[in-house]
Image (cartoon, rainbow, N blue to C red; front, top):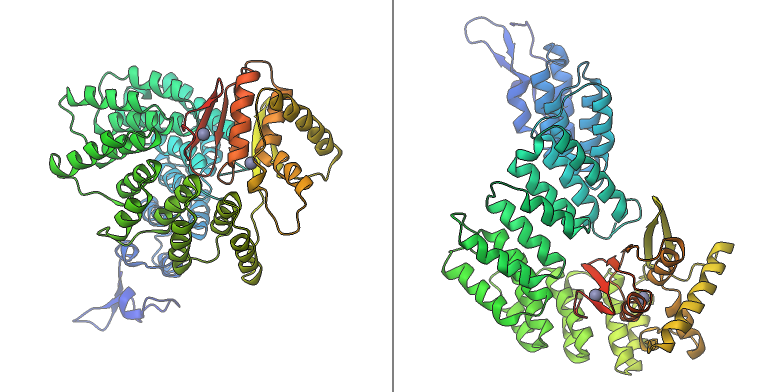
Length: 518
Ligand code: ZN
Ligand code: ZN
């Protein structure tokens, strides 16, 4: 198409970039908008190309629209995902390839469960899913579980597990369960949504397993604290022709560190580098750090961090701070906190963990100092929030909340429960319940109504005997709630699974899968 003047479309691309002057005649040819899509750097660029496509009558070309959607979903910020969804809605004929792009974007976004809303919609439009559809959907289930700090109310543990099971049924009915990638995504989803048994059953049903499938199952055991099973599975993997990769070793290291297997951990770390020539990434270093910290080798852990070939991330420093707190090493904790403050002063959890550490050591001056610092810097403690699912309804509890009559009733039930726990040896750890001005007699009450205790109590009262209680918490579980959950699992013969900000805790018969280290 030759035109008389260069096209003028307001936006970041210039006239010269979107039209080409023909050399012989004094006319212009618009450049194919498709060629411009990969050059986009922002949503504004993309919108200009869309406007340009109207001039060249490409706006409804399915191939062109799919390029635009694919581009948006590769960078799944809310703005890009919103735009991609708009484009998808405007296509006269829904298409599974475009859905797959969108689902993949949502799976990696902050709103993974939107993938399901969309999936249900396309099913009503008679669009047939294909082999690429399910890994994204299952990733969305796992993604909803893995969301950090955002670890929580709107995507409850069972909510996602429910979706995941439904997808699994669909997969089976429609014959997609023969694909390794689909099964691997199922293993990952079940593990992250808290159902190890289902992950195992999918793995065992697989006729063929590649590196990703083995790694997913090793990781599944690892995040559920079953280190020995993970190691045995790795040995089985070595008897096959399938080679491990960085993710396989991450699973192994994760397993070792969550079960305190220091020697094995170091053996795998060295073998990964020396025998398999795999370069460790930040997550591998994180596991090694955790391993040292767990063993109480805090000075070694500090040295390990300062000597890393990459700059230590905030998460690594925070791992060490948590370890200092568990081992009561206030001096090193202070040093670590200073390193954290060099990178970020705004995270209330860092102040609270250090303050609790000092409180337990009876260092009240330090405690007062840290609370003063929080006040000066305008940092507010994030309220604890836990949710528990009972009869398909999600119930959410905030620490200390007594705004409704039901809350007061629930508090009375917690009071009764705590008295029962005390009879079998539970002692409230009031040392961490410190706030300036809080009287001694109020400390126990503050602890008592922590959100996870409220959620567990609610679960106990409203579900049949023997049923597992699943709780999701937005922060790291505190030592006192951890201890109470162990006693509850023992005396009420209930399995309790708490997913906190960092990991799963499986409480059974008075013990926790984390071995009291988290
Ligand atoms: Zn607590
Ligand atoms: Zn635990």
